[in-house]
View (spheres, rainbow, N blue to C red):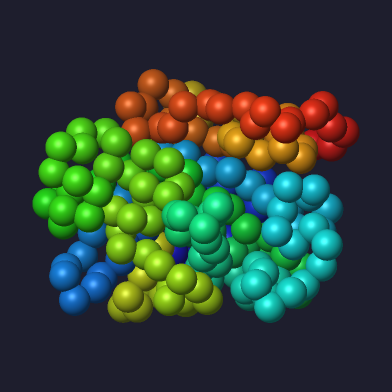
Length: 203
């Protein structure tokens, strides 16, 4: 994918990533997943963003340049992948929440479990990374063609199929309309409001 398409605010890039394909190649093989759900995080202006309080060694990748992968551990259990967007020096990233496996389903199922339904292989950000084989070793990876992790344009998604809603499971700025997903797609994760969520001002 042309990095210029990613060099915009996260909330603008997030819906454009729907239908795009994230692929990861490991010694086991390649898994490719068409993205069906994303969430935008706007850096230091966003209370729910890892970069809200400024740059740290953990979140440094979020500050650019665009076109890299920011990977973090969620609750000490699951890896989550974000596509870095925006202007170099200004934190901005899109969390990849869910997708549909289009290549390497057998390998994805081996990683996720033999009994997992196809629609649930990459449903939720932790499952998405597990199916792809993405770990903390991929933090900062350049998503260029030919790299171990790549982002490419997929089939165009009709605007009529894109839905917008509040973000899932965050306690701060949870009601910002920064979640984008494909209507009726079975791979999209279920909405869940954090028990610690409170109404907030913002986008």
